[in-house]
Length: 217
Length: 304
Image 1 (cartoon, each protein chain N blue to C red):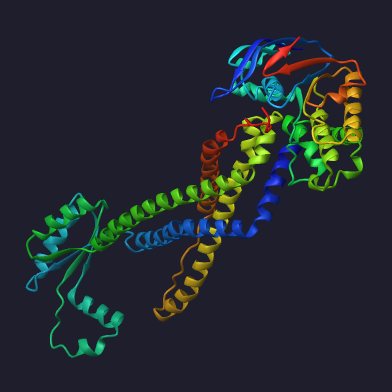
Image 2 (image 1 turned 180 degrees about the horizontal axis):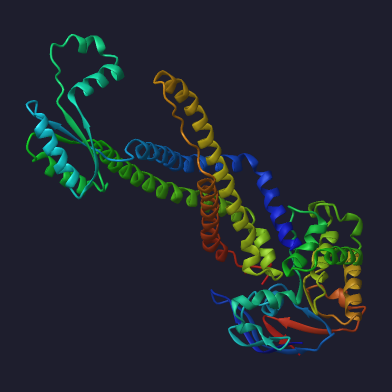
């Protein structure tokens, strides 16, 4: 599903974010990317969504080499990905419902059907009762769950989450991990970055450990 | 389809949210457009008037005071055989004096004259109306014997026509400049909108929006603002004509004639609206093309 082949990424200015990274993730796998701040976790996720491009090596997603994808093809790549951003990237000029509606609007999804989908996604993350609220009125944990609802509403095969439990206390973090596990159970491929290894303790999952841009064995 | 509708509703909501600024932009566009369009209406009216008055050009031939009846007959035959002349009308000097008395109300003054100061005259109706052909014919007729003066009556109409041509050029220049201004206004409005909606654009790009999807609401906004500006211009012109006609009514009663300015024709009105809509769309398009590419989702998170 996702494969990195000797990927190097150097940012303008000389910062080497990833060095010779290679791995394969099969369909339906749930994988954690760990490492300290600056280890290259976010860069790795950005390369998958073609928000950044590799300097060397290839990034293959769904049999497409996204590193060389044309600008025009990017939207269609990203529609197959659900991305949960570290800083949420919610829109505060519209309510919870419309935030989740946005991806369906972008895809030109059937209008009536999309209402059902939005409600289903909100129900999944436990925010159905807040659909009329403005996201600014939500707590940090609720904003994170809203971001998840928006990422899953068009039922992507791959879900990318960048530090989804970053600023949350343990209880919320476990809640969110439980949501991810339920996606894993229905066959979604998940790639979750975290610097907080405590969330990994209770499960046996595959971990890609990054240290200063290099993958640890 | 419903999503497109939702986008349009979003545009309308956004417009309503900043309605004061929006109204000002629309007013500015309306005034900018009403200037050339209003001048165009006045020119159209003037042209109609010219066509009405100078419908058929005439050449007046005034004969020498000593012309006898034989001379008149000879001249009449010559004119009748001329290939460029459609028909002629003879106005005897007594008849002319009588007409003058009746039409101008100068009977007392004329009655005081001890002899008729008017010569015999022919009114010549040429077959062709082109300015140059008429001028040549006038020169030719002036050389005939016993003809004192040959006068081209419609010369003033041609001068006015040339003046109208000049006016049309002024309108064209004005319209071009103000159209440019309209495009600039829309360009700037959309630029500000793109800046304030930076977050939305970035998020939309990140979750798979095509450039077309992002561009559309701005284009709708530009076209709508242009259209509303066009409607404002139409209202300004119509209202102005109403006021002018009200004054003209009093004026034309004094001159015992009927004259009123015609409003924009339905076709011209439609052209005005479509044109301003197009200019708004163009301004938005240019602005979006210029500014949208600058918003690329690069820094997704603070951490690398």
